[in-house]
Length: 291
Image 1 (cartoon, helix red, strand yellow):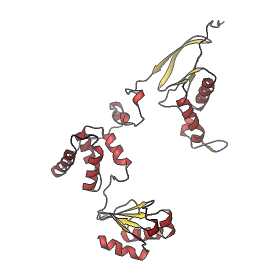
Image 2 (image 1 turned 180 degrees about the vertical axis):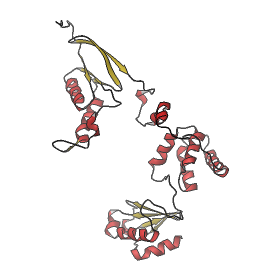
Image 3 (image 1 turned 120 degrees about the vertical axis):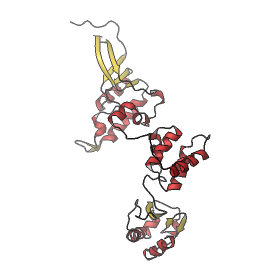
Image 4 (image 1 turned 90 degrees about the vertical axis):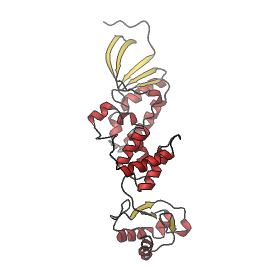
């Protein structure tokens, strides 16, 4: 027979951060209890976070889960502990003592923004998922001199990664991988951070771009006035589709949502020059001007 504790503690431990554990935590916290939510994985959400639809209503799983994720994360009486497991329970009803083992993170949780840089630079992670020569780059002397010259232009300034990448992108018309690795080593910043910037902005490209970039507006006004036919004509004339570059590296074809020239639609921008009120039969002359 287990004796009931004479002094009850007003705190509750919920094991498992799935949708059931989250809802139980919210109900208990709203009832006035301090809740400690323990989850073995790196984040709460459970299996439901991996689903697209739920049976039998076919509702969006994330639409159901997201409000609970926000409410649990913001609730002042819910303490979330992830990467944690219960190893021992002792005591009696109303007065339990629980031992929890938490896996080390090696990061300051209060300063974490979820950027993922720590994972990509973790020695253990890279032993399992190795990245060959991730910080080494054998550049030709002429390329190394060009990059060094670009870096020296901004030496001593704060936050020079972006302008350095912009100048390299303008110099080479794209961002070569070996040069990005060299920049990471040169500026002493994580390679993952360099690639995050390089892949975030549409102005940057990791593949060679043409000397002339042809941007076709597909906004509402241009679409109504025949931009789809303009794009089709360009594809046939250049032999490439949107996002591709001709083999001679002369032209890259892109589409944009709006160029701000609705009164002149349909519009195409080649380089820095805007061509207005185009027709499919004028595309050949337009490309001929740039060749």
